[in-house]
Image 1: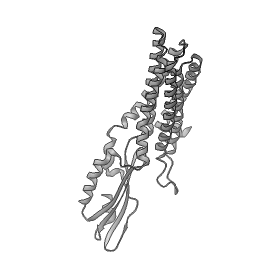
Image 2: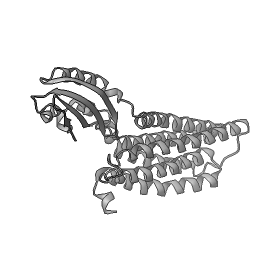
Image 3: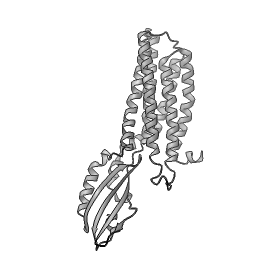
Image 4: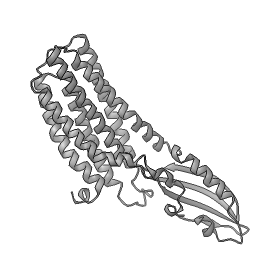
Length: 303
């Protein structure tokens, strides 16, 4: 618990997890009591968001573990893996909610709407609290951090080795990417929940005022689509990281950096440049360089 509370991201996730978990059971209870598929589907979405929060919390803690001999790159990629797993779970939930909604569109059941509005408004308030808590982290993921790729202050070499006639270096670098995919994923889940709560409120009003019981399955379809749309970007980004893709936002900077490398005095050539996003906030890279015998390899690598 001390490790959770001492860091901002894990502390925010933990506090919202407690609040979200408490309200989730309240929403599921009244969803079953009132026979509202919209409320039940939103409740299960919130329940799986709680599992996403648990995995996000564990990933936030585990990503701070120190590198070991076996895991020499550290545990930063655990955040990406947890986001990918959560995304797959949410797609399964969206599919089942969608299928049940289609069935209820054909034969809409009668609903007890006495507590629907109260519970839905409560859920909306909980989710708005989450949006306020995580919106700052989400905005930072689109902020100035993308320009940090070319900053030499964030890079360092691990080893070089030379030959008698020409120096030959193999450099590893780490660059701060700044994007916290873990917190971004939490924000997108909360945002989808917020819109889902609004959908339940709208369907409840339509049922009470006009007797449109078809509004409940329509609302559920809306929630299923929101779940799917919120998950697709996460799965896409996670797949790109797991497949070691060059970060799209850094392609231009890396191209410019490689052009600058060719102009370094004492460098004969370079080969095998490889760059990938190691974790949510780190871009890693390796490159082989060949230098003249009269220059210090470390000076070339540092440039």
